[in-house]
Image (cartoon, rainbow, N blue to C red; front, side, top):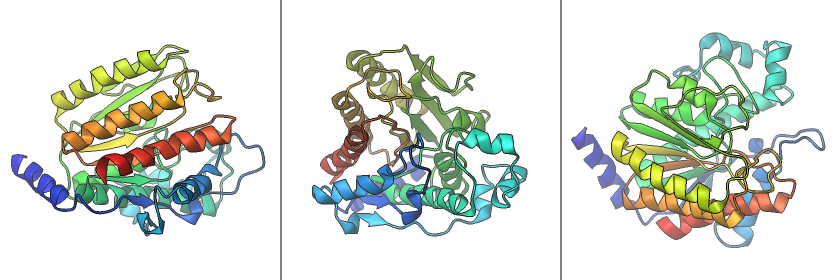
Length: 318
């Protein structure tokens, strides 16, 4: 294990001066009916914002390639996956997803997963890499749920372990909703540690058991939220000693999020991301970041909160 860690750190240090790599694809902004509660347009607006303000340029973005079925099947059960790609899910299974099913949607989900895998490989080289989409933590081994069909970070984690790129992975989920699918996928896997900080009374109402769970009370403020994560995250990392981190940076913790129920400010959300990324950088832990949720009725707040994560990655790493 010690030798493996040295290899990762050596690669990371050699490439430290490179550019931030961000996965993005035209399929990410999937067409939905007007007034759908999922703000799909954010996947178009976030890259535009980052380019307009000169945080990023076209060279930062890459289009993910195609994913092999066998990679997905490292995580998802074949019966479920075959029903999905052949569009034979039952009506109740489709209702649980929240999106109308189509071949285009399936292609989108596969692109997101491949994007996260390619990001993870870039993170090993450069310290960090980010996916404009992803964070599909409600996808279980055998079912989809709540806008999540294929679990991108879980699949990428299994890919890294299966191919010898990592041995001990922490999935750090700071979306306001518990990562129930991720918890179920890795319930018996000692090489992946799942940590979820979420709203105690928020969805899912029947929660799975992560390796670490913490539920915030409704209305939790910046101080309460930040004090807790700043205390717990270093302890989790010190105890588990991961060699790679997947970070789900959902911005549905902000106070005006219609699905959030917490009272964290945009500034507090940014401070959360600053703490996590600084900690990973200081401790030379490669980190892949997927965006996760954000459902504020004020679209510009969603874009601002997500954009802050990319701004901080540029500031801290490059």
